[in-house]
Length: 302
Image 1 (tube, helix red, strand yellow):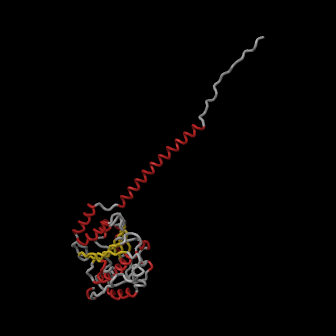
Image 2 (cartoon, helix red, strand yellow; image 1 turned 90 degrees about the vertical axis):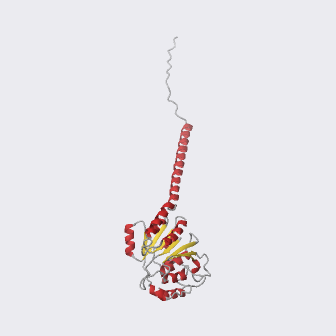
Image 3 (tube, one colour; image 1 turned 135 degrees about the horizontal axis):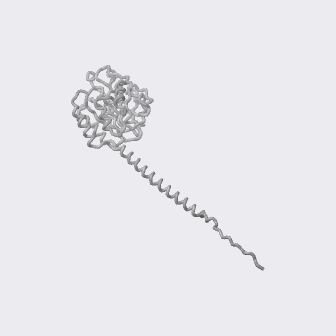
């Protein structure tokens, strides 16, 4: 009996696919690569950002600072300009001021661009009673921050205002207060709100005009500088306040009353330099000065 032939059919099976472990390994490897790449690029970007931030806070290079001051001093003999010694006195404080430095200037003058440049990467704000001059400055120098305010005082009212302020030392004209809400006749309270929160390091009073009895004078500017220095929160414990044309009656009398002779550290030509500490605890302080000013400047010298 013959048995039938048997055919054995051989065929290739489907190739075995990669195991789940292999796929998991590939996924983990991809995740690690992506994480490492993101980490290194983020750190590099953060380092560049930090370096840029540090550079933005850096002071003006000494060579540039000195050159600006030198060329400004060359024209210092012109009428209405600060002398070379006066410029150097203010500049020395700005140079020492840790960047960024907060500088507030009352008045627009020949030195406006100089102050803005010397306070490189700091905040410089100018205040003027002339809306026209502020507008022209913003038009020509849009990067400069300037505001116009209304001064309601007159040079001829000096002694009446001094007596008024003495009667309001515990009230509206106290040395520590938020000027934004002050009703003191000497307070500059119509600046943009955020400026009252700035811890000013340097305040320069070089305006408004005070050359005649009808001119607004610098009584309000000096009073406001004195209050800002004593009331500031944060920042350096002391504020440098400069008063230009310190030889005139208004400037000298108001400086004695609100900046105080005890805080006068130097005078250079027509510039008075005061260093005023903020009042950390003012519960026992009534006046601006430890010793009340006499205010005995003859009225015919104003």
